[in-house]
Structures are given as structure tokens and as C-alpha cells.
Amino acid sequence: MGKRPPNPSDIENGLPPLPPPARPPFRPPIPVPWYAWLVPLIFAANFITFATTMYVNDCPARSDECILFDVLGRLSFQPMKENMLLGPSIPTLRRLGALERRLVEEGERWRLISCIWLHGGLLHLLANMISLLCIGMRLEQEFGFLRIGALYVLSGLGGSLMSCLTDSRGERVSVGASGALFGLLGAMLSELITNWTIYENKCTALMTLILIIALNLSVGFLPRVDNSAHCGGFLAGFLLGFVLLLRPQYGYVNPKYIPPGYDMKHKKSKHKCYQHIFMFTSLVILLAGFIAGYAKLLREHTAGNVPFRDVN
Image 1 (tube, rainbow, N blue to C red):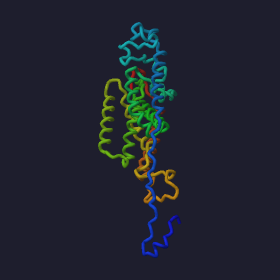
Image 2: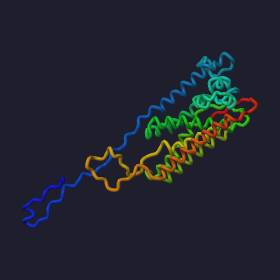
Image 3: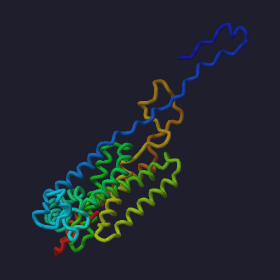
Image 4: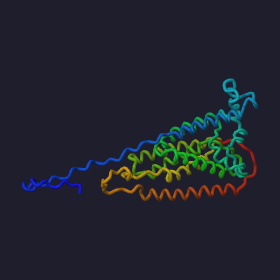
């Protein structure tokens, strides 16, 4: 069916019948990148939150040494002796949702999420938001807003949880989106591992990414930087990358793009076996880690209250 019947004159003359017309080569469509809107929205939300924080802080009402008072008025920064990052006071950050283990244990669980939207100062905010644009825009264009949004928030939660668990004396007041940003870096590493077959310069990409991660983690050894939030966010993002950033293996074609009647030889499955193993193993470890960490945080209580601010 579908073949041209042989020409009788060709048979009488002893000529072989003409072959059927060749089927045109099939090429799947090139995937269209997602339009990135969530990362710019997070970027804007962080700046709006910082401006609101400075308005609530109202430095002129409590100090005569506010930085840039003539220009910013009520939004001016605390004196350098109180905050070297050009930002608000510690009591303001605590009031608006900074992470403090004692308050989390007393029932204010929302601080595990609210702290990732607060920043210790303008310099802290700029450093984090530049990293967000550099890392998050590409990821959202490749994987969409839903997966990157979930990755950002859950990584930030993982960083907050690790920060609380490592604060044995309950002395830390921590703010910043670095846990979520390190989650994006961790997800980039696991995405490279689980989607290994689609990369050309595999070793170069892997070594470059490891170098970037190492340089960023080294910042955590500076004074007053909450490196535990960095490590917790990175670990959560690394595991989430195996779950959320799974790509089809090289050579797979979605059935909806195959023309009717087109017979594809050696059709490949969507994912390789090791991708499924990584995904389910990471999901189990991630759920167990969040449940165990949260349960441990609620069981243990820390005495003492000598607050100082850490940024992450």
C-alpha cells in the first residue's frame, strides 16, 4: 500500500521497476527557550523589600549619624559602626522576619522563608542580585518558571534549615538569599551530571562549574557570613536538580512531533535508567533530610540570647 505499481512496459523490456520515492528526512523542531519573567520579578521583589525595610527602619528617628540622610531622608542607612553593608539595624531585621533559631522554636516557622527575602545592606543585596541574574536567567530560559521558582524557594528553605541546625547556641540572626542562589548553583551541577549525554565538552563544563562553586563557597569563610546556609542551600539544590531539571536523552523525539506514518528506527526512550535512579534516590534523600531536620529543630531548644547578624 502506498507503492507505485510497476510499469508494464518496463517489465516487457526487461528493466527493473522504479524504486518508490524517497521519504523526506525528518528533523524534530528546535526547542524554543522559555521567556524569563520570574527571575526579574524576584529581582524586583528583593529591591522593593529592601526599600520597605529601610522605610520601616527609619534611621533618622533613632540616630543623628545616618549615612546619606540629605539624599535619602527616612531611607538613609545606619551608621557604619552599626552596619558596614549600608543597611538597617538588627532589631528592624528581626522584626521583619530575619532567621533566629529561638524564635523559630517558639513557633515562628515562617522565618525559614521570610529571611531569604531580606538583606543586611545594599552591598549584600547587590552582590546577591547580580548572581541571581547571571545564574537564574539562563536556568529559567531552559527549564521554565515553575521548576526554577520551586528550586529557588526550596533551596532557600534548605539553607535556612541548615543555618538553624548549626546554630547550637542560638546566637545568630541571619538574612539573605544566598542559600537559594547556592541552590541554583548546586542544581546546575546535578543537571550537568544527569544530562551528561547531551553535552559536548563535558569535562570542560564540569571543571568550570566546580571552580565557580568552589570560589563562591570560599566567600563563606569571611567574618559574619553564614556559610551553613550556603552549604544547606547548595545541598538542597543539588538534590533538587536531579528531580526538577531532568532532560530527555540525546536522540529522543517527542511522539507529537513525528509525522503520521513515519516509521522511526531504533526509537529511544525519553530518559536513561541512571536518570531515573538519580531522580528517585535524590527525592528520597531530600524528603528524609527535610523531615529529619525539621523534627530535630522542633525537639531541641537552645538557651541564651546574644544576637548578632550573619548574612548569607
